[in-house]
Length: 267
Length: 280
Ligand SMILES: Nc1ncnc2c1ncn2[C@@H]1O[C@H](COP(=O)(O)OP(=O)(O)O)[C@@H](O)[C@H]1O
Ligand SMILES: [Mg+2]
Image (tube, rainbow over all chains, first blue to last red; front, side, top):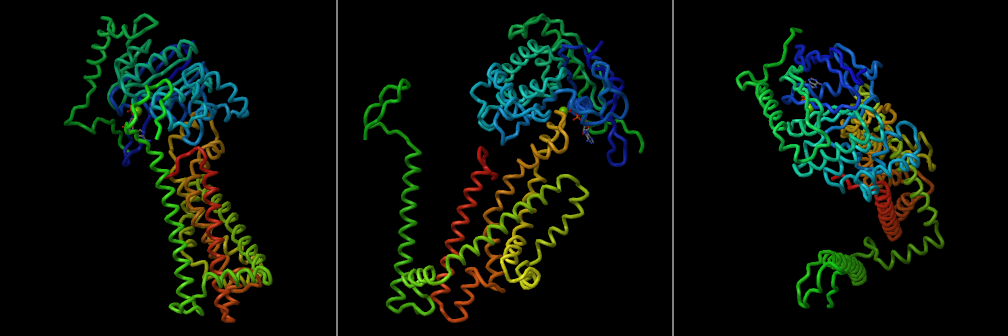
């Protein structure tokens, strides 16, 4: 059975008295342990889709299930990471990563004991007592992911998590994420602008159309794992990249119709 | 000056090499500033003393530092200066604590309901606009000429300022932080305790210094209106019997009290802002 199922979910907003479609009905079934990427033009509704899965926004129609259990409109079932690290600046790194455990009612002491080995194992040893502003962007994103891992959800959503990092750091983070994904066997949904990143990380890539978004294509990434930097030079990698690039180019909004491509249902 | 080699990192630099050391420069400036500040203070005292002693300033109005110390000492030994000081500072500190805590609680409570905060906001602004000191006579009638009316005045002076500060904190919360916590399954009370309160602390802290002096002003006006104790009452009484030296003693004591309480809020601010960079 698929782990996460999105059944015919769409999202409408009302803007200036007109119903405005942000996401067209989407159906997606994600198997347990898969790494899925979503690419598409900006504004096509990727973040809106994630907000619906995370329960922060209610879909206009459709249903979301996790292991067969309906979770539509409910928070706390999946992990969610954004481009902003969203660490609490007044807390140390250690106290930041335990926040989900604290919310669940675990004592700080016990939560810290559980978090310290994680921080040490995944590259943040020695930073436990530092505040986020003392860390680099990459290190802060690591802390953000460890916070999500300690929350221990099977499915994790990533919304352009490495978008603000420089190329060098981003590659490091991608390798680090692959390692963690492999060790923890999580199911990952990953939104990115970066085609290389999508191919390098994923089992499967969903390409979205421009707004209002729907699934345009589903591309299997049949590259062997484990992957490393040389994977990016393989002929198959470049072939996939070419395919995806052409698909995305078709979705570039035409400048003369700019801002008018939304589906307007009279209101 | 001997140059220490940096252990293991570099070879010993040749003597005469210019080594930039900003911390030493900063330390030197700090030391010189303190010396300069003390020199100016001393100069003012000497000029004041000299001018009144040689008759360039009328010592009847201006008193003089030595007289103030002498009269002040008498007020301590024979009068009630110390218990007056305790009375005034006690009312100020109690009013300040109550005003800050209750005001902050009011400001933070606006986070819970947008409707409630929208309805209340204009009244907060209106209450803030009332010159509360002008209400002092009414308050003294309501709460009596004792300690209570002073505390109430100090409280009223601070409560709205604290509420507005906490509310600004609430308005400036990063919505994404709330969203992150909610996505982790947090309930509203978790968001309140783990995000709203801590992220508003810098705003609340930023008004402590203003509020302690507002509280002191409230207490003193209360004592001016009607009181049996307090530095404010002592000054009023001394003025009425034309004991201007004693008025000066009161002013100097209040200045010291004000400085001490200011330093107290600086310490409190440090305590509350531990591990954070202050709000710019
Ligand atoms: N709360 C909202 N109210 C109105 N419009 C919204 C809201 N959230 C998103 N949108 C609109 O929906 C569209 C999709 O946004 P988003 O999901 O952020 O796109 P993406 O993440 O793919 O860049 C955008 O046009 C955006 O302006
Ligand atoms: Mg987005």
